[in-house]
Length: 121
Image 1 (cartoon, rainbow, N blue to C red):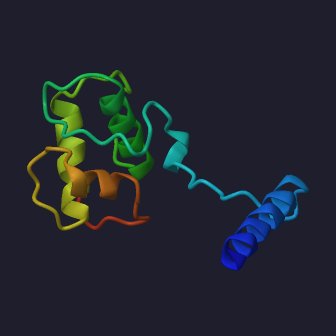
Image 2: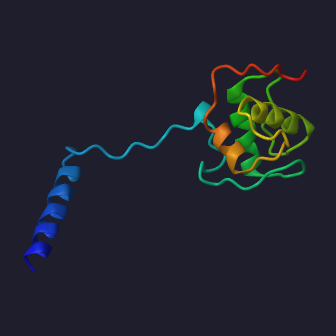
């Protein structure tokens, strides 16, 4: 019974401090390049022929990486998107299959400043 009172008091104190602005809210990680076409937690497997918001998100994130030309963020996973994905996969030492799976999504959300693989052009 005493333990419940202590827990309840601690929760009440934390709530009061948070409401008073004395405890900072948890910050959310910024998405590279301001890409906001889909939630960063929405990571379906994408490949050539895929369409939709997740493709737009992936295309936007690839543009943060560099490489010329920049992709048009149109939500259609075509040959140009596949080429850019393969380049990014090579920069991370991933299989260069052009498929955006879990490891490639992780790479898209963590761009590196330099990639020593020449961009195919």
